[in-house]
Each structure stands twice: as C-alpha cells, then as structure tokens.
Length: 79
Image 1 (cartoon, rainbow, N blue to C red):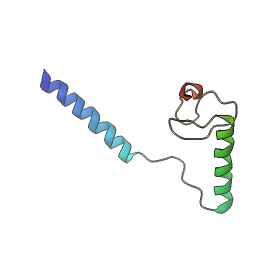
Image 2: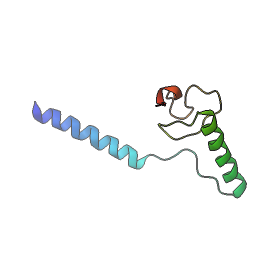
Image 3: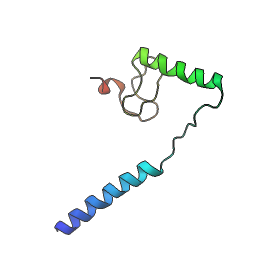
Image 4: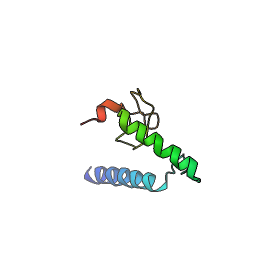
C-alpha cells in the first residue's frame, strides 16, 4: 500500500514538473518598439486598475472580475 502511495506521489510530481518545463506561452513577446510600448501600457493600466493577476501575472481590462488567461477571481488574490 505504501508503495502505491509513493508511486502516485512520484508520478504526480513528475507530471507537474514536466508540464511546467514543456508548456509554452501562447502569446509571444512583442518584436518592435511600438508593440512593446503598448504591452507596457497594458500592464501599467492593469496595475492602476488592480486587475493584474497575481497568479499568472497577466494584465486584464479595468473592471474585470476574473483573469482572462487563467480564470482566477481577481479579488480573491488580493492581500
């Protein structure tokens, strides 16, 4: 029984670590100065509005209740 529990824990840990190393970000970074400036402005606006997700660090539009990237409730992450 203990062997089964250890195998399940090891398999789960291995799976989580593998996923974290293999997954890709769906949005590539901006390539030119104008796109980079627009991205920085989006982050600044999200920080001012309090809609920067603390779970995935993605900006969300002002007035958002949920992160549009990871789905977490934004006000649950405060504090």
